[in-house]
Image (cartoon, rainbow, N blue to C red; front, side):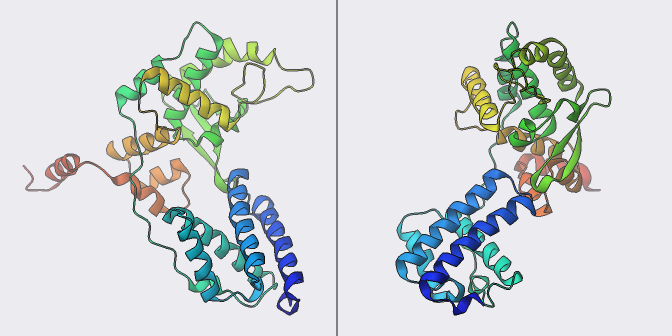
Length: 312
């Protein structure tokens, strides 16, 4: 057992297991690179604290763990960030226990701090319309950006999912797109006709021009290409979104996820059931989808009035 190792060796061994755990998350759990990177950052911070404080990581006590969390609080980390650190530790020690590296799991005895429930930011129809109309359709990039924004709004996709799309991911004849979400879970989402029309125009008129700029041997099947003919990364698509948000004069704090939030809220407001929205968003848990039920009091009153037998 690793608990029997001397302190310095145990700490070094623990750091090696953090590396192995990150590989497990990436290759077996199929988490996104950004998620794995976040776990690594949090776990590396804990490993540094373990060395500095002389803690034995495989027999760490609840009291020592609470001391670590208190240090994070003193460093003015937010409650959400502290909860994320604890979640990373909980996953690591659960994996260590499963792998037989340790027989102790003090982290399991700790409760995550309660988080204030924040409602997601959404966009109204005017905001969306202004962003769509901000695209300069006299340029190839403008047509591409319009197709991207329409697809984002029509599918409720994460920006990382849109970046990963290939040409074959979109079935224009059926009006649908195949998305690969967290954990490489596949889902098929229908698209409204306008989005299909813009993606078709982009594929026919613009993408061939962008693809011609690709260096020989670097050809890509990516749906959205940059001005150099390369796959547009999630960061490039976020920059594109921010640029059009600025041109449209909408709230500068809005990010690509606002489109996803708006998509979900509009579906629920239009009468879609929670399970269907969960499937379309690719949520593993229904509780994640339930946050979108933050309908206005007036809408709730109207729904109750129409549905109740004595509502009239």
